[in-house]
Image 1: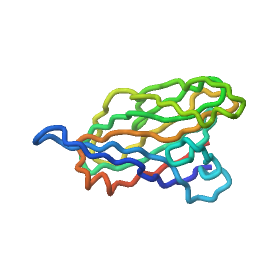
Image 2: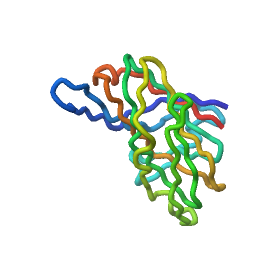
Image 3: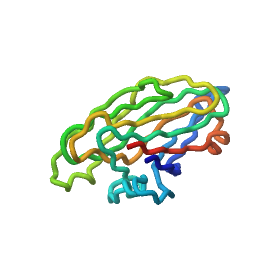
Length: 179
């Protein structure tokens, strides 16, 4: 079952790179669901005291989040960080942009017998900057390999270069959870 989710922008920072150069924004996204379906993202939200907004999204092997967004003009997208928690063995996470692989990272392994879910790590930058045309795009995070406990995603932060701040604030960010 597919669940539609609204993203809440947690952090929006505007930088002036240099006189006459394009502006970019750093956007940190976290899912909140208004879908009450049986296998909705809402059923996967976990409360964690040290999460950025006190919630994470719990994913298992083979599951993914698709984050759709639309840009009014050509821009450069740069995935800066995925913040996650893990209680168990390493998990392999893959990020794609428009069905092109950006990169893969392995989560840290920590066995806290259920008590390590509130310990968070950052993936750091994933892949290279990618130039995208104006229009609709899809950023996908997929759990390629995982133990029986999966992984919890706190947020995904990416930067968009070449969009004026007012335009990006009006963009739609939609997440679909695929099982």
